[in-house]
Figure 1 (cartoon, each protein chain N blue to C red):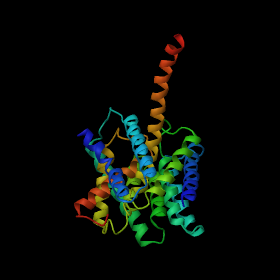
Figure 2 (figure 1 turned 90 degrees about the vertical axis):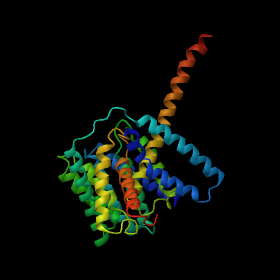
Figure 3 (figure 1 turned 135 degrees about the vertical axis):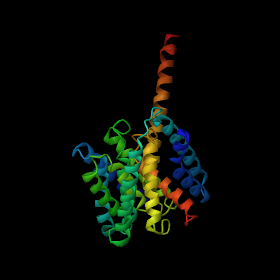
Figure 4 (figure 1 turned 45 degrees about the horizontal axis):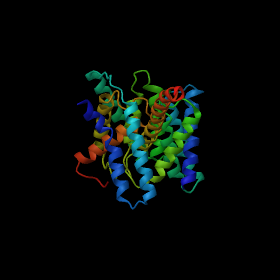
Length: 136
Length: 174
């Protein structure tokens, strides 16, 4: 179920992102539409549809991130895929607790933000060393 | 006090991580988990905003009421209709986005909707759901500046409120 989880997460995340960017919906409306469509359709078209609907909903919450946090579709795809991965790993965690999907989405977004932060720090340190290195 | 509210947002992830490490993990998955936790710590550091402006008492009241309303509506739709919790939260979210956006109450109402997605094994009665919803509204107003712009922030608040409610009502079956 790992691959269907990641694929459905990426699709839902990009769907939510598109609804916000191109249809100018608010983040609440975009996420709610993705959740409603996934919740109504997937349980009837796939054996594990209920789980996949939860993954799609989780990715739609990640798509509620601000423009500064996730600005490009490629970034949204990475974060949504990460949401699907976290949902797969954490299937047996916080079972039945409302907000579980949002927590998984937040972890995916925070991990992505952490990765970007680490890359920025690495580039600024490496960038500042480079001229000194070339001057020698 | 500021740090306390920030820590409340970390409760769901901490409980989830604790439950995850109770399961048998290979060293490879353990290493992935460690790296992932390190990235999350960096993410929290980069998304933390020092400047915060707390809302007024009226903001706390309206946010709490709309979150409790969202929670009760979602719980009722999920438990007493064939919609299921995911679609129920979608219906409540669309209604909140349509009718509560002008008063800026759509976000707390949608956060409340996540509370209503709880299983009856965790939140067994409507008063428990209402209390968790009220707590979500309070947390929503109290954590301005914590995880701002991070998708899933509302769900984290809802999960923290549900866990606090379960603790207050003496256990549940987590």
